[in-house]
Length: 242
Image 1 (cartoon, rainbow, N blue to C red):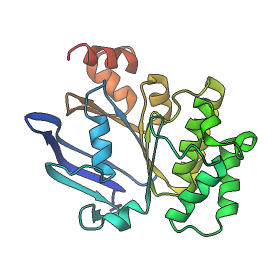
Image 2 (image 1 turned 90 degrees about the vertical axis):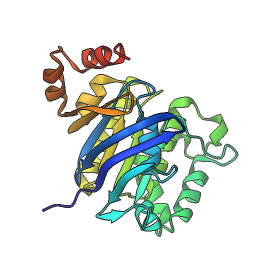
Image 3 (image 1 turned 90 degrees about the horizontal axis):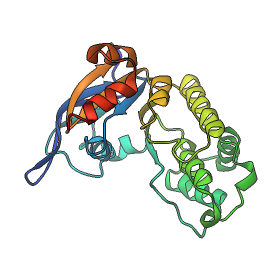
């Protein structure tokens, strides 16, 4: 039996009297793209922060590659990376310098070759020597993605990875991510408020509402479960029940 790349069991996080995530369980198989969907405040960010070891669960377990995150934190996180539109990188460094710093932090070898590969994949040639503070929002998004795939992780957590990109670049980025997944067996947890994007990218989707997992399956299975026309109508229905 194949061991899930990520296995979450009965995960709960409370902040005082507030329960942000309540008893959720899910898994991500090797090479699978799992969509994480839910309205603002549903618990998506808290879940990702627990998966990254940034905050400690109140209860439940997180295992990656068959290993417990608490007991094997360094081993696991060395094979994981993360990208979000809402993170920033040192503004005084160039794009390439930022990528070199990331490579050194991960102890990578053959850094120049790998940076060349990632710059090509994400079409960053025209601004690879540009100082980061001078990047447009779309260029900054691509830099964050470059940082995430540079280290050739086995698991990638992507929080709205195409936000602020124009439709052409967003389409190319989605294609690039699927190609990386296909060629390397990369497992991805993917969040977006673009329902068409979620349908295109996700093999399966889990839907959180008020910290609870309320639906799991393919996009079509979730649409059928709630008797709606498409995933956007499901989202609107659940968001308005808050």
